[in-house]
Length: 252
Image 1 (tube, rainbow, N blue to C red):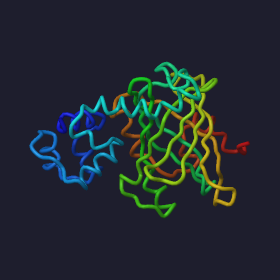
Image 2: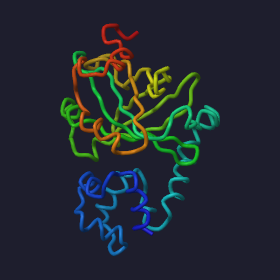
Image 3: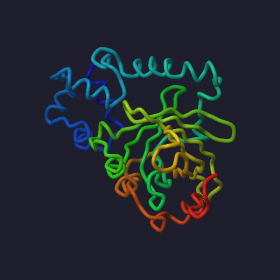
Image 4: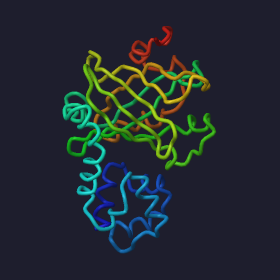
C-alpha cells in the first residue's frame, strides 16, 4: 500500500529525480519504497508525510481515503460558517494547474517577487501548494531547505472572486489573498491583493497588490516561471503584470 500511495503522490512532479532532491532522499532507496521492497525509517516517514501534507496512515490506507478524511476535517469550518458554496470553487472560476504570481516585496519596495504555485482539487476542496523562493527566505534569515520553503493553503469562493489562506509549514505567520479575474485575451489573469499577518511595528508593508497568471496544467509550461522565480525589478515584469500591479500608485 505504501508504494502505491507514494507513486500516486509523485504523479504531480516532473520527475522522480526532482522529487527525491526536494525530499533529500537517495534515489535508489526511494525506488525501493515505490516498489514496496522497503519502508522508511520513522524520521524519513515523518519527512515524507510533512512534505506531502499527509499522515502516517499512508502506510496502511489508500491515499485518496486519507485525503477525503482530511478534506472533511479542513472543510468543516468553511461549510459550517461560510456555506457549502464558499468551500466549492469551480474549475471555471479558478482552474486547476500552475500559476505564476507577482507582487511587490513586503520588505523592499524597490523589489518585486515572482514565483510559481500549483492548484489542485480533492472532492470539493481546492488547495494551493508552492515554494517560497530561496532569495526570499534568505532575506528573512530563514532556512532555505525545500521542507521549510514549502507553503500550502485553501481556496474558497467569495463574492466576485476567490480568497486564499496560506502559510508555510509550522510558520507563525500566514497570508490572505483576494483575487478577481481580469478580462484579457486568454482570460488567464487574476488581480487583487495579499496581506501578511504581522503587527504594525513589523519591518516593511503588510499588504500589496497581487497578480496571478494561469500557465496551464502541463509542468513544462511552468518550467520557465520556476526558473525565473525570485526577486526582480519592475522593468523585469511583463507589460500586463506592470499594468495590473500599478507600481507607481500606492496601495490603499
